[in-house]
Amino acid sequence: MRILVTNDDGIGASGLAALHDALAEWAEVWVVAPDREQSATSHAITFARPLRIRSKRPRWFEVDGTPTDCVYLALHHVMQEAKPTLVCSGINRGPNLGSDVFYSGTVAAAMEGALHGVPSIAFSAESFDALEAHAVFASRFAKRVAAMALPPGTLLNVNFPEAETRRFAFTRLGRRNYGSGVEAKTDPRGQPYYWIGGSGVPGYEAIASSDCEAVFDQKRISITPLHLDLTNEKLLEELQRLDLGNGSDERDV
Ligand code: MN
Image 1 (cartoon, protein in one colour):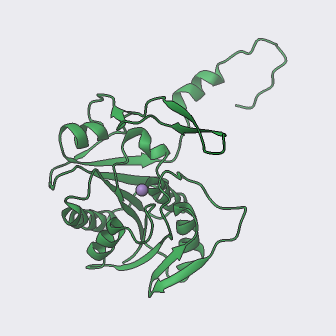
Image 2 (tube, rainbow, N blue to C red; image 1 turned 180 degrees about the vertical axis):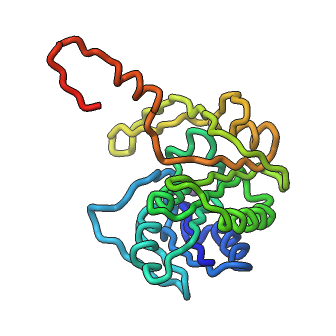
């Protein structure tokens, strides 16, 4: 069993070390991770400049790029001769719940793995107070996932609550509120600058069986299956029946 570990907090992050060590008890673990923090870079890939890979020690590589660059380079270059059977991203410092998955580099790394057909899991934690216990659970869970066949184009998004627990729930994506604040200020050179996203901790909507409910309200580990097919099938059906009214439309159905 060979596992690629990456993250968006950077190769020196304690969450990555904990995940690596726990997985290394039963698998051959390779690390290909950003050389610095890349949180909230989402699924960005670097096209406009060259990338450098530095080997830190055997099977550890840092890349001066995004989490997605790391997974891409791992699958198609670094581990080309020894492809991973599983991609594990994290453990991220801070949760990736609900709408967070659209901004998270941690989750995007797992999405990149899934896009290339490799079963992938993203791990994030509300805090690192119980990091070792979270890593033990992550390792056991990864072992179970490695033994099952995830459907193509799917990934698992795992979030740990603040305190150590073995209780978990299979959940759906919730919704978080980031606020809508824009703070405008002036820099020492007289130029305006802006802070976006508000000042507080993001809130969340009360949605039953959601990842936010599991982690924040029930203090459980949340496991959410995600898939990469964003097509809205119901709306697609409605659109097929849409008459645009100019009488000369041609469409293939
Ligand atoms: Mn992060």
